Length: 455
Image (cartoon, rainbow, N blue to C red; front, side, top):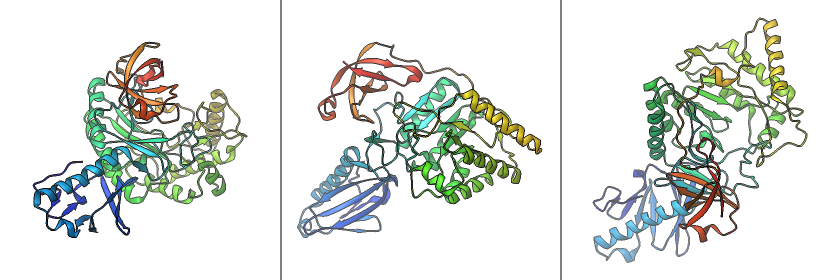
């Protein structure tokens, strides 16, 4: 954050927070001798600073009204106000809190690379899809979550938010490398993509890039944060597809599977219908947890089929020149660092696809043609494309500079050769390693996602 001594952001005895896009709200809490500013950053984050001066807050402007400041000259006053802005900048960098998860959040901006980590940034797996991960952190706590996300996570200790302009600039570079033809920007991640702010701006900027080569922008969502207004804005911004996760129709079961008492299945179903009636393609994505939600899984598919019959799909995917399916059924798997419901059984994919084929045939007997067992990668036109080169080799020993604390305990994040590296086996405090160059053995290089061990 910067100030302008000519008065653009600082005017006389006031600071106008309305001129900083990232600051979405400010509250002032007055104590006996000190004033605390609670500053909301991009809707979902906040930090605070304590001021020794007497101040007032009105309409997003902070006025310095302390008697001791009345006699100082203008240059000194401007210096004090610049100091306040610098203090806010430092706190955004060092003391930002995710309002949803209550975790410390790192604001990612240059020169931290956006390629190399699964929690934030950009992922290129050698296809026409570029995964866009603007943040981490989720607003529900699914008991089967593959990355142990949510407020009550037992393993995640830090979150990340990527600056919008930086995310777009780096995305452009990957598109230019791969060739801007039939590219899909897919907003997903270790969290809920709809919590990113400003989401419509992100979608619009991605769409402006991709539509030049008949590409699209798509996103995943659990639906909790979606509103009519936000959907309207996403439609206007050019969002092509919304993958909406619905795992049960029953109220009790749906809340259990979301891990949240606030989960409102009626709201989600209403949102699904609203999206279906927009220019955004709706893909309902139920997850089968064998021996847990078997009956509800089928009910979700029935709901999707009924929506499709009520309002048939007419949106053409420019990548395939075909209409997209209404259902994207998935099978729940187990992961090393994920959560698992004890009663859930583990299925092989053949059994899962046999079930989907059976459902397909049952619908056909009723005269309903619904596509269930075709892999989504084929349905959406996913295909192999040139992949970003990896600057590291497996088992190579490199030096990396530690720049951030890790996502979980025992990890830090390092930088080398314009890549970020998840460094594990760390038994020292992050503060002692911050800024230092350390030796790292590269353990993973697949898809330009890098994991290394401290040596």
